[in-house]
Amino acid sequence: MTSFGIMQSSFMHEQNYIERIAQEGSSLGYSIYRFLPDQIPLNNISGLTYDRSLQSWKKATFPVPNFIYDRCFYPASKKDKQSPFVHWLKNQTNATFLGYGLPGKWIIYKYLKTDPLLRRHLPKTLKLQYHTSSRALTDWFKNNHTLIMKPIFGSQGNGLIHITKTSQKISLQINHKGNVTHHTYDTTSSFLQFVNRILYQHDYMAQQMLTLLDEKQRPFDRRVVLKKSANSTWIELGRAMRVGKEQSFVSNLHSGGSIEHDDQVAVPSQLLLAADEKITQLASYIANLLEKKFPPLFELGLDFGIDQSGKVWLLEANSKPGHQVIPTHINYPSLLFEYCGSLLNEKEGVKKI
Image (cartoon, helix red, strand yellow):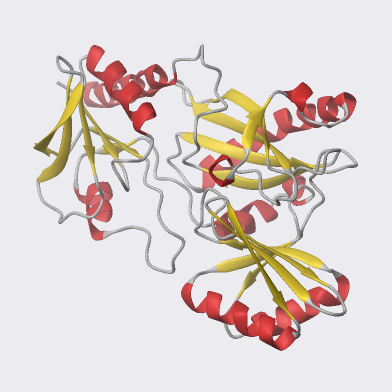
């Protein structure tokens, strides 16, 4: 029996989604397992196994699964994101990962910036270094009054910092799981000391703050979810507006944002229509570009901003997207196992040659 393992940073994450995968996979004859990445590399893994008859999970030890679906969300720290256990799974076992995932935001940005087409759709960005951040930010504020600081290894909007500088003060809004705290610095030196304290613990980059607000002054972006099909082409499964709260600067769902129908967002319909045409062109182009540089990939969430002139900006590429924007009539878990089936067929074909 073919085995399918789901690697998670916590068994509390994505419980409904994981349950759907287990039900679908077990009905197709797969043995379904869940496990955490903080283990010692051994032939038997500790975790949970799905009991189809009871429709529940129970503790188990099991061999390395044939397929591994990595849904871990790692914290934004400077530590190596790949534990010895994960490295062992990828390099010293016969497990097939559906995708290895993408590196940090800065590496992705540098790579995409080399493409002439995408360069026009990327916000101005620089990596902040502990020893040179003071000079870099001082130079930045000579021509700009706002910026956003992003953790290079962050996710779900956590750790985003919105910064506004006036002649009298520097104001900060810091997002953590939807809770926004406000700080004010009266001098540039005290602000720069704050930045260096953060950089001592986490890797950050500074990015141009775009005006991505609807007519109700709510932040919004266009999330597009793509998946690699059985014949290894990228297909779009869904797109939707993610809208943040008024007075907020983030639209992430985990930070208080919500998915809204297009006609609920205060954006001119013609502007949105034109932007969507451009997004359709860019989404598959970006997916193929990333796959060429960072294989293997399996699914992608691309976040696009649309400014008030209608220009489209790529804000982020995520290799472990949520699936809330996928229409309910699409049985996404079944697509996972269709892809596994295609990979099995490829392996059998290789053996027969």
